[in-house]
Image (cartoon, rainbow, N blue to C red; front, side):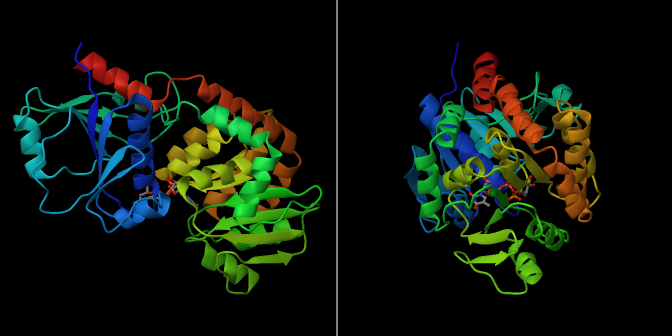
Length: 380
Ligand code: TRH
């Protein structure tokens, strides 16, 4: 059996952080856990550098965490393709590199890593082959997913162990909060992280939290939502700043390194997440969450949201399922959030227990890197 032990991973940053975030996680996992040679090509290095501060955005090539990080520029350098080539999210490979792939003997295994969806069509599309119209190359579509016959989810081998250790280690949690300048929790306090696109319901959410029956600290990493938060609180906000309104304390964090952001999700009791990567990481955090899905012009995101929501809440008692569903819908519709949040409060224990059970269910399935490596071994 031939093995695929070296990779070129290509990532164009369309907008936001998800493309780079997912590509980086996969690259690092293949390099560190499998000992493979990995070259990651990213067109906008400053975006990757925000997630991974060890990356120097001014360097054309560099070695970071066992990954060779390369700035994807034009003209593309004359390099010999590795055994496996991954284009993340359908990015277009440089013509000269494609030609080099076609000349390589044997040709590389070519994978298009697709976006994640829980929709029913995913298993029938996963691993479909598409021959190149001119060159002797075949591209395979690799769809991440939540169940059998999908490409699974990115999950490092020791993730569950590390997360569980952190969540049972109050000293590690205290050190985390201290590192980011957040004081100890008040008695009975809940901590909520808030990462979202612009959302017209944020004022309503904060107002509701300010009038909550128990203290709440809302941790907001710097980003697109911050101007709306500042407007809702009628002040200007910068990382490091904290303000109090009734029961609510808002603490603005800098944009965290990706590994620290994972810990923020682990440390909070509830997480608002968005896009694709933070959405998955919130599930690995084993804490209840709300997903602000990436909105598409044609509204196609609604079906994607609703499909996952239905799958996720199906293990909850009906009233808790309805409450969480209503919150997800309200947050994405951007109205009715306050009432929906209050309804969720009354099902808190159920929601928390369900998040733990859901993580366990997912962790019992093979992860994306494993399935990818397995597919390559079977195909080559
Ligand atoms: O940034 P996003 O909105 O990315 C999106 C999605 O990937 C979407 O599917 C895609 O179409 C679009 O980009 C182009 O949300 P996402 O996917 O959660 O990625 C955010 C990344 O940023 C994730 O890796 C976590 C990381 N992050 C940090 O490292 N530090 C932080 O402080 C925060 C808030 C996030």
